[in-house]
Image (tube, rainbow, N blue to C red; front, side, top):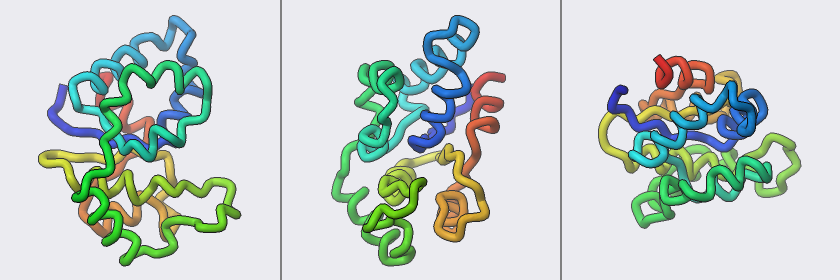
Length: 155
């Protein structure tokens, strides 16, 4: 196991629950690994991301790991303010976009507060100008997609 801290986005958790059904025995090792990493602090997120998880099965599964979803500390809030100043369009106040996530600046801000080898896990494409991968790149925070994440943690 590497010593990276992975900061996971709601879209990656939701995609994982769709692809690797929580209740199917064949995928148990994936969810056991997620649970282990959530417990030992190698998989974290923002409390704002926790609130975006709407799937009932996923909500039920994730509840015991709520402590892995970091609170909105002053440092996180200061980073969110910086992100919103640099990228005011990152949130969609009107929520007219179906894929809009107002948790994105909190996810990035949480990663900025962590020490060490930090990687954001998101399924957003690198083509969106205000997407997580591009903004992370500008802040020198690596980001990977769900498949790359699984390859790293399951090897």
